[in-house]
Structure formats: C-alpha cells, structure tokens
Image (cartoon, rainbow, N blue to C red):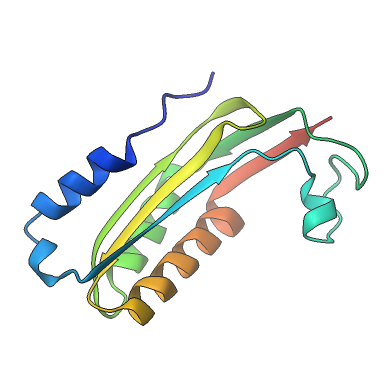
Length: 134
C-alpha cells in the first residue's frame, strides 16, 4: 500500500530552520510521479515490462534502504551540498501517485543541480525497483 506523500512546503520550512540553512543559497526539489507512458517508450530501452504503445496502469515500487542511505551520504559529501532529504513511496502505485521526493540544498546552482541529478540517478538506477503493469 502506498504511503502518504510529504509536504514540500513543510520540507522547505524544516530545511530553512536547519543549522545548515545559512550556507544554502539554493534548494532544488524533485517529485517523481507514476506516468501512463511506459519506460520502454520514453527511454527507448527494453524493460521486460509494459511495451511501447501500451499504457501503464500501476507500478510496483520498492527500495533497498541501505543503498538509499549510501546514496544520500554520497550526495551530502559532494562539494557545496549542505542539506539532503529523500522520501520514497512503496507498494502498488497508480498513475499520478508520487514515487519519490528529493530535496537538495547547497551553496550555488551548479553544485545543487549536479547533486540533485546525481542523487536521483543513483536512486533510480541502483536503489529502487520499479515494475510497470498494463
């Protein structure tokens, strides 16, 4: 069963109240959502799941917490990064459901963009399992 999604507004209030906030000149957030178009179609890769031209109705989503923790630690260690927060859903998700929220705060735009892109990529490629269903 899917978890209740967090409030990005609440996350931002907490981030700005964090002791690291004075070092952060930028925050970037990512909100991944279940889409109707299959990964095989939008990414052009074979997934063994829902095929191009078909439509996704649900997504089975899970993750390995130890790998997620390692990815967060690696992002926090990147140059200029002072704040990282991640929320991942789990279970059977429907189109439109939130898959993940990621918030990264750091000193300057290039550092924050790189950290967000790297962290989301690591989460998607190494930490989570996603099985699309037609």
